[in-house]
Image 1 (tube, rainbow, N blue to C red):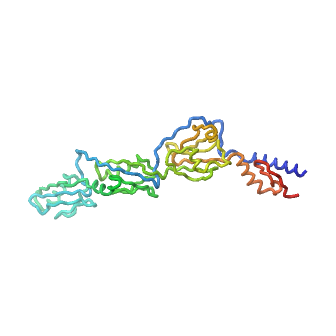
Image 2: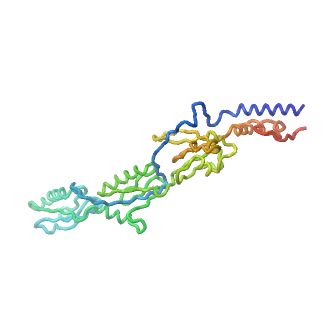
Image 3: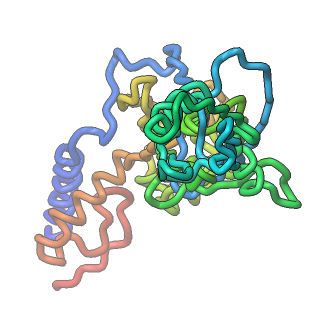
Length: 339
């Protein structure tokens, strides 16, 4: 009689666990079709801390009909007819000034030679009658020389390897640090080119992604080693799950969730049927992952029932009701604890 009562109670517990395990962790309905064509998201890799880029510099001097404007480091020859004490070669200092007799410091940064001449004529007219002044640029665009010195190495020539710092910035020669985190290579190239164009003419850049450290994908749920993983090339869902220790026995293979971002960086999810991939080799279900994708493997129905039994039944009922049984799955040998 006692055996019958316990059997009935066990069956009741199994039915209760089945009904109370709740809906699937990743639910599908009639509108969710695995065969539906899935939109392909194409976007550039976004740089992140630890990424290494190679910046290759190309100096391509070309004739320029525009009037030249002075920059820091340029060297001028200033000559004043009949007043040789004024004559001298001067260098444009970092503050944009030159120093000349009688007039002292003169701000010349960004001026043309004609503009400097007119400015000096006005200043020297205080001391000389109708001064005749000539200004000649003897060395110009010297920022490119400083840049060449900064980037020239015996190993790489006119290029520089630069690592994205933890704060997201790149340290660059002779210009301010550039924010690289979140930028694509074309966006980074435009930002660096804009900064260099302020001080150097006829400079073009090539940027190569030398080493990836931010091409990450996150794997969680019923896998052997939930973690984030660096993708050094194209990886599919099944490949990244293999790196994560494979699926656990408790995994629901038919509804693996992949959370990606669209072209506007908005999150969107896709369901992957790894059961088809493993059973029939249907690689159309084995999606290629993108940077920062999240792969979540839910529990199977039986695993959810086992968890329900463990949390809400096994720990609450007296031991003689559940001893010797796995009420969420296979019935084991019964060994009554209470006689």
